[in-house]
Image (cartoon, rainbow, N blue to C red; front, side, top):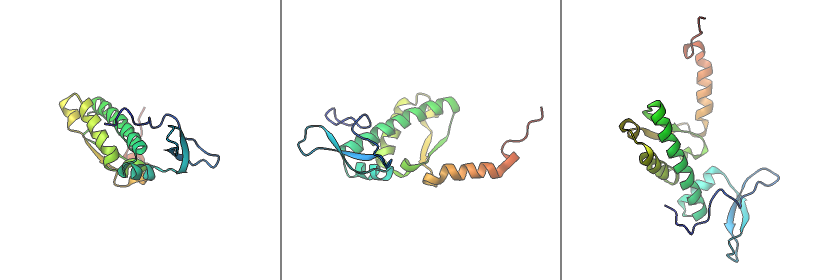
Length: 149
């Protein structure tokens, strides 16, 4: 769990420059608590920074993981899920995301069946959604049969 002295991630300090790439924020040299833009940021870089121990990246990943875990616990209670696959850019983040995610999921899963859900990174990573959409399109009426109204 992050300490109370850690800066709040995702609240302020990051901006989107004209070219559209979000920038990382770092404590200024004077240590005043102000943040300045440092370098372009990607989900991959955020995860790497968290694994390297950067406190802002660690807090951001912890916050994202907990939010996902709570949402997955709710979805599991509603839909009686056995497996959840997480795709997209952060799906390959590893422990910085999945540790807090699992912790929050287990903490908020109140029913026995919900505690047994498995969360896995999508094998296709960022391409999982695109491949799934293509497969659904190619399946045609075999997935969603035509209605006979």
